[in-house]
Amino acid sequence: MADNPFSGGARDDRIRLRTLINLRWLAVLGQTVTLVIASFFLTLRVELGLCFLAVGSSVIANLLAMTVFPVNQRLNDRDAMLTLLFDVAQLTFLLFLTGGLNNPFALLFIAPVTISATALSLRSTVFLGCITFVLISALGIFHVPLRTQEGFILEMPEIYLWGFWVAIIVGALFLSAYAQRVTQERNAMSDALFATQMALTREQSLTDLGGVIAAAAHELGTPLATIKLVSSELVEELQDDQVLREDAELIREQANRCRDILRSMGRAGKDDLHIRSVPISGLVKEAAEPHSDRGIELLYTFTPLIGGDEKQPNLQRKPELLHGLRNMVQNAVDFAHSRVWIDAHWNQNMVQIRVIDDGAGYPPELIRRIGDPFLRRRKPAREVSQRKGYEGMGLGLFIAKTLLERTGAKVAFANGTDPFLTNEERGDRSGAIVDVTWPREAVVMEATDVMGPLGENQLIDR
Image (cartoon, rainbow, N blue to C red):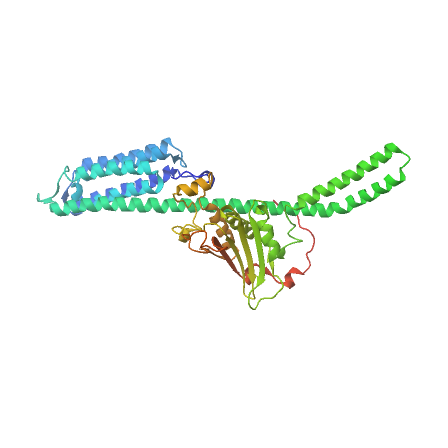
């Protein structure tokens, strides 16, 4: 499986031994029933002794595995591959005794290869596939003929035999490639969702921490003000006592220092009870603030659409919304030349926030895939030289898109102009565009909700 920084926390790639044991028990049952039917009901001449020896080897292997290893044992890549290789060898010996590729159950060779493609590395899958290819080819030439009681040999015409061989090979290749592709996409999505959850948890923790700080500043404001007032009065009254006056001045200075510390810490977040919603301009600027001093000019526009009220709507201050917008602004600042425009519009039905930069825009070949996790492309030498050390996987945009969609938004990506135009032919807003649109009821807190009583501060239960 692809190595990435999130796989360790999001899932365990190793396959359970119990899974392979259960699949092998199913194969043993099917093989036993098939042999009994072929020998006693279809009256075929089958070497039952050797066939049941092959089936018994699978039974013994299962019993040994259940005895030696714990129930929840997980196999590493090599051990799982060897286990599947044993199953391929056992199936080969059984088919060798029962007609080789003339036996329609030769199709079962596809199963171990598909399992390997789903759960094991590409190297192990290729190795197992090559061994399977060799064994299937050998069975087409070397096998014990399948005979009826009258002595007639049951075999397909040569052209059908080799057609069946091709069908098994092609089927194994197609199914294994398909299974590995689906598994990779599933794992990539799992990793990306895990990273999204981590980002959301971090944003929620920062919001909660900001609430604690704001509550502390609010609760400590009055006693600090009292200490400052009393210490100032003592300084005036103790003009004749140098020692006590210096102590009073020290108390006043420390009170001022506590006030400044609480004020600076309070900028990290807001108390959700006091600011459960903010005007759209405040929310947008709060999301963009961490990127305001990176040498790129941020230009804001806040205007209503046709039919919209001049008064700005108050948006719910959700961690998902803040983190999603912040990632969008970060991406725009990363690739802008000098400016980023952040436009917010609203009316009675919807709220729209658009982020535009004056950079080169999204690569045309990837624009339809933007928002997929772990998106990579081969960068041209000129782009690498301009942005040394920058290696994007598309994960940031995926996280932002996922978080914003959780708030009810629709997110669209586009370019402001043709990326193949020269700099002289391009306009100002010519780079990448991110358009985020919500139904108004999804994010707006109306006046009746905003102006209602807040109640007492609540404890943050972690």
